[in-house]
Image (cartoon, rainbow, N blue to C red):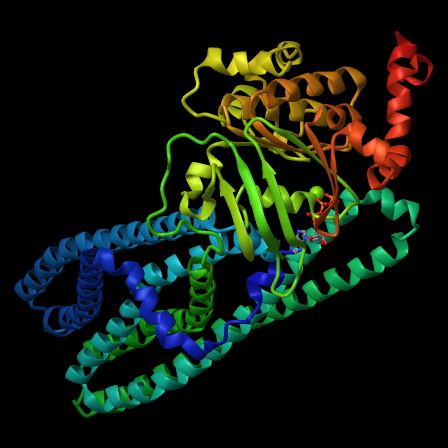
Length: 606
Ligand SMILES: Nc1ncnc2c1ncn2[C@@H]1O[C@H](COP(=O)(O)OP(=O)(O)OP(=O)(O)O)[C@@H](O)[C@H]1O
Ligand SMILES: [Mg+2]
């Protein structure tokens, strides 16, 4: 799933200059480090070229004329400089690696912070896989580019440059031949690197599709089997693996061809150099050490040329990566604190919807001119057909979204004047599919209020009736819940979420009741837990349980984003309207179960 988004090229290269300048701002705080490693790289490459020159001197001034003192003095010079080079090598490897990590850290940190601030509508528009790709592969690619990319290209240019300078100093005619060969080598290398990179990107794309296919077919195995879709699935899968194989094959073929091609061209250059140099040597225009130095320069030039080609090929990818990261960082939260927003300290919990209209997207109308006044401590049950707008109402109370028109007031004050934190920290919410974080039960309950003591955590669990089942675990409160709470049942997760909510002592309590059936004992535990929580707090419950609905101060039947009916259970039944119909269709069986011991499975077992 994710790779559609990793590799998409929806950000064209049109703004590359702007993006490139912005990439540079990432390393701006570390200017001194960059200066440090660039200096080190310069020192290393100058010395590299100089060492080759020294080896020429050793042959021409030491070995050939048999001059022992010259030999020793050149070797001493060599020895001294090698120490300098070692220090410089240490310097640039260390500084580059640390800078890369630093930039990766900064990028991830700012993405994480920004993701925390973004509103829910960003998450409903943007697949998780896309976001994860930004956080992982894109931040890796950008940090690599600003660290090793800079080093490799500097090293490449310096190495070729200094080698050329020494070559011109030794013999300018031969140096001209080498200079002519370099662009050819570069073009060939860039061509290969680009093609290879493209094939590898294809491989990665197919690879993640294959992972996705495995995932879907394993998790959905029952549906696949029930519908007899195995042959089609196998055909599809075969198509995917086949395409991946072909890309991988092409990448392997190109990689294998790349080095020999570059080698062939260098060999041609070498051959020419040796031939022309040899001819000159016979007439005294060139020393043996000189020819040897040329051979060494040309041979060692292959590596920087490859590096340059690779960096060049990757540059475009990194810019695309950076552009996607910046698009995430630039996404503006649709719901934000307004300037001068306040935290009043206390919130009582009076809530008013004043002619509120809302849609998730432009032009969409989910709530229409919705008005409602809820007094502190009141319990409102929301019922009605699916898609009617019940969850939307509580989303607005939590200020996950804000009204398109109209006003929501908390304690008589437009809630946009309050800070998000002021509102959301006073709301306790239990979702339809409660989410637990991996960690222990204790940690999950404490998430409601981070500074709660162990005693407070346990008291909260006792209050909602979760304590008993928690103690049946061998590690009790320290039992691990697994990723997303996968080691617990739905009912248990709900109870822990209730404990978490009560621990934060919210003034407003919101619950999207689970429709999934839990056993009767857990059911009544959850019921009691909810009642404890609702006492004295303004509560909105999207209710499926008859018992919750009956206890509510007011029941709202929500249909097409408006209040179709409102009143208590008894009032609405008398009216014989929509609620009556709902009740007779949906709740009568529950009702009968509750009052007829013979239709209640738990009672039968007892
Ligand atoms: N994130 C979203 N983006 C766009 N439209 C949405 C979004 N969430 C909900 N809707 C739409 O808003 C309408 C109301 O949805 P809502 O979730 O409030 O219904 P509901 O009454 O809670 O239904 P259910 O009982 O099935 O939970 C639906 O038509 C739905 O398609
Ligand atoms: Mg809903």
